[in-house]
Each structure stands twice: as structure tokens, then as C-alpha cells.
Amino acid sequence: MKMQFSGAPEITASRQKVWEKLLDADFVAASAPGVESVETVDPTHFRVVSGLGVGAVKLRFKLDVELLDIVEGQQLKMRARGKAPGSNVEVLSVLQVEDAGNGRSRLRWSATSEVSGTVASIGARLLEGTARHLTEQFWTDFARRVGAS
Image (tube, rainbow, N blue to C red):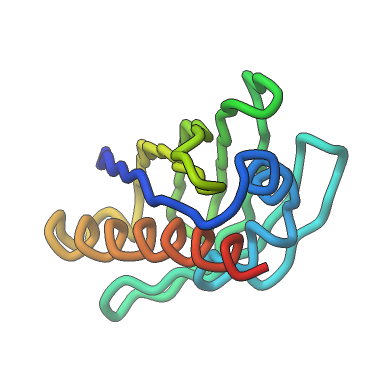
């Protein structure tokens, strides 16, 4: 099952500060619901363990996360691929940081998720609604925390 989401929150922080926080795996992971651990492999590769619940199905995903196509201070892509018993997930996020004036920034993001297996069999509406909520919550929380730090 393939899903696409996007948003563009405005952040009360400079573009440089937003960029620095995007490259901080622990800071990013703290906004992600269900993240249990983050292991930095190198500056652009991470291993993440995350729990995900959709309806009555609760799964624990082991994810390989990679930052790629990095244009310093402007944009990057974040790819996460992972498995849980009987399920697979792949997410590609495209992130752009822009000046929004008056010391503020805008983080334009889009995410394409592909889920298969047990978690995908739950039903399109339930899975898409949960995935949309978690994705939007993640980037909203990230924006709030960057602005507050």
C-alpha cells in the first residue's frame, strides 16, 4: 500500500538552526512516535528501532535510515527501510528548508510511504489515517521543538 503526505510548517528559528536539527538524529528521533532507539552508523546512516500500532496490530520495526541527495543548508532526502515480523515499510521524505522572513524558516516536507504485509492488511482507511496522523504529528512536533530550543 502506497501513501503520500506533505506539509510546510513555519518554524520560529533560523534556517541554519533548522538545518542543524535535521542532521541531529537523536533530535529528529525524539519527535517520532514509538522510537525506542537510534544508533548512528556514520553521519548519514542510522539504525532505528520503532514500535508502531495500527488498530489491534502492534509491530516493532528495525529500520535503516539514510540521508541522501544533501544540498548543504537547503534540502535533503531521508530514506527509511525496515522490517517487522510479517511486514515491510519504506519511507522516502524530501525536506527543504527555506527562509520565511523575520528570523523564521519554513520546512517543506513530503513523504511517500510504502507498507506491505500484516500492517498493510489492516485496511486502507485505518492505515492511511494512522500514518497521516503520525507523519503530521512528527513534523509538527519537530518544528515546535526546533522553535523552542
